[in-house]
Structure formats: C-alpha cells, structure tokens
Length: 146
Ligand code: HEM
Image (cartoon, rainbow, N blue to C red; front, side, top):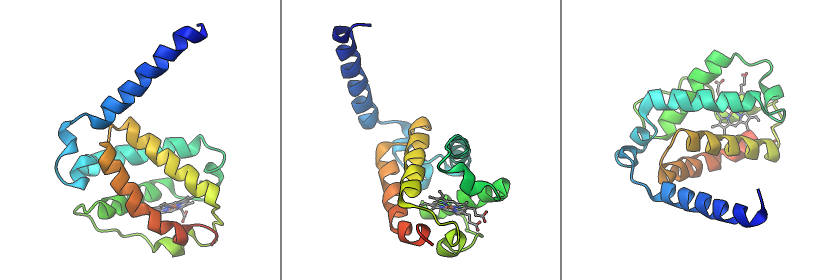
C-alpha cells in the first residue's frame, strides 16, 4: 500500500473512533455498574484482562504464585464495589495484598493500559471507562513500591 492510500485509512479510523466515543449504545445509560454489564460483564472484562496479563512479560511473572480463580473472583467483586454495584468485597486490603510484590510505576501503568484495552474490547461506554479509571487512580499509592 502506498503512502497516499494510507492517509485516508487513518482518517477513517479516527472518524470511527470519534463516532464510537459519541455513539449512544443501550449501555451508555443506567448506573455505572449497569454500563459495565453487571456481574456477567465484569467477569468477561476480567477474563479479557487476565489473557492480556498472561501475554505480557512485564506482568505475568508477578502472578506466578497466584491462585488465579480466587484472584478472578476477588477482582470482579472489587470492581463491582468500586462501580457501586450490589456486591461485597471479601478480599484483603489493597496495600496488604500488594505488599512484597514490589510493583513498579511502569507495571502499574501497563495494567491500566490493559484495562483500557479490555474495556474497549467490551464496548464499555467511554464516560464509564473514564469514571472507573478515576476511581482506581487513588489506589496507585497503595499498590506500587511496597
Ligand atoms: C488499580 C490497580 C489494581 C487493583 C484495583 C488491584 C486489585 C487487586 C485485587 C482485588 C486483588 C485480590 C485481593 C486478594 O487476593 O485478597 C489483587 C491481587 C493481586 N494483584 Fe492487584 N490490583 C491492581 C494493580 C496491580 C498491579 C499493577 C499488579 C502487578 C503488576 C498487581 C498484582 C497483583 C497480584 C500478583 C495479586 C495476587 C496476590 C496473591 O497471589 O496473593 N495488581 N489485586
């Protein structure tokens, strides 16, 4: 493909992303938890996230000794609570859990990027995505360098 043919393709992609961001899907209304597809949507989101973690050499080694089914269940619960859903988080405190893992800022950012990619893949409305990221951001201090 020549350069002059590539430019319109990029413009098309940009338009598609812009339209996607503005599109009003049924899930763009309702509670934040509903916009994530409730527990079923959160389970699918976490599965997609776990696949991304497994494929990322920056992240996968950190989970080498983790009971993944337990992590999956607790991560779904935790997200559900953060999104004001009708769940109870039965795991441990964020600082306690991540202490000893020595997670770097770059690893934290990589996890956030995977989360954004997974939310895009699940068609979570953009405003809902932004609200989740804003709620997770203050947890950063409890997760890195402990
Ligand atoms: C805002 C970001 C994050 C949130 C909300 C979060 C949340 C959680 C939750 C809910 C658990 C389960 C708690 C429990 O076992 O009782 C957990 C465990 C874990 N997290 Fe995170 N996490 C975050 C970032 C990270 C990052 C950046 C890494 C590493 C790159 C990481 C690595 C782990 C590991 C390895 C476990 C399992 C620990 C074990 O096996 O006991 N987390 N996290």
